[in-house]
Length: 443
Ligand code: ATP
Ligand code: MG
Image (cartoon, rainbow, N blue to C red):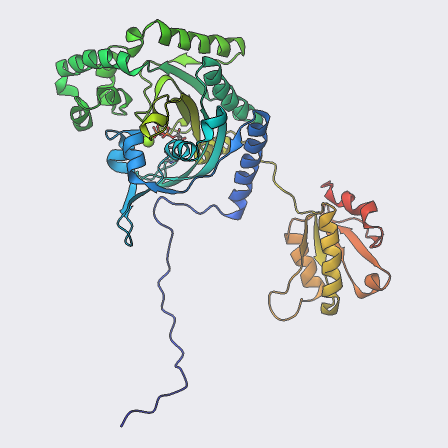
């Protein structure tokens, strides 16, 4: 005999453990996200001014794209990638650690260079398994510009001027530009031999990373952050001395354009950047105000990447900036962010009026007013007094009172919530357009 099945289900005791975000991956909460939206808005507008168009590529790409594109002996590929095998089909996949490789893949896949060069930009999250600290996270965000299909130094100059204009547009100060040329692969080969010879002479001071890279990617050693290796890196042979006429001409033409536009920079022969795909121009915008996470934006030319990803050879240049670092720096510099203001808070004393009030609010919104509707937190809408309290703490400039009397006369009462409040005025709901815009003034 089986037990009778109870139809009453026992209420289960909720005993769920609180779940938190993954270490190094941050929520951007409403107060903060308003700054992000503002920055993104400025970027969009500036990109349009420069005729750059938005591209959105997937967050997950084949692992091979980064191993091939960025280079096997790079920090990112050696130790920072979130790679996994797709359980369902065994594909080797990686959360993108940067976006240049993905953009290039998309450009090749869709044959975008077919009708000539392309100016592109993107915004989005990237993933690198690093030690989280201020300005260094495991999920972080980049905004990037990529120009493909143009060879001349004028386009290197354009992307640098674009970044420079962005700093100006957002009011960012104290970023300095460092510039270098990595020449072409054949020039790097001669330099590489000299570099290996130099480091072999100073084996004793090389750290583990450097020893491992000595014969695989000695140029990478110049990128070290180990202060114990400063001397050996300072005295290393300079790539600039191995550049041929053509590479030097490209670099000098770029410098001339920057000079003519009043863009200051310093030459840094040790600037090699973190990925293997760069050649000729490389640059970074750096600040001293963010401790050791001082690189705000980095980029350069990558004329060989398109070919490596399987496309027809084509030149390219671009940069990426770290959104968290740019915002932290703006904060540090006390920049005030222009945020979207709430113009009005709608008080609805009588629940029966809700349908018609909502109609009026939607009309106000279509006229450009940011208006928040009162909603009940418990039963009913709450008293006038409690609604006014909510209006006061909402930061709105005005309260709109949709009382039964007002509605009967097809009007609304408008009350300033600033400076102790002013006199209440009555406005016609029929002629909303006559006064709606006056709600936008914050004074
Ligand atoms: P760093 O030397 O600081 O590690 P990087 O050379 O690895 O930087 P890039 O790959 O050139 O950085 O990325 C471009 C920009 O993205 C950096 O200048 C920085 O502003 C930002 N960025 C890179 N890694 C992170 C991270 N882990 N957290 C936050 N921002 C980052
Ligand atoms: Mg890094």
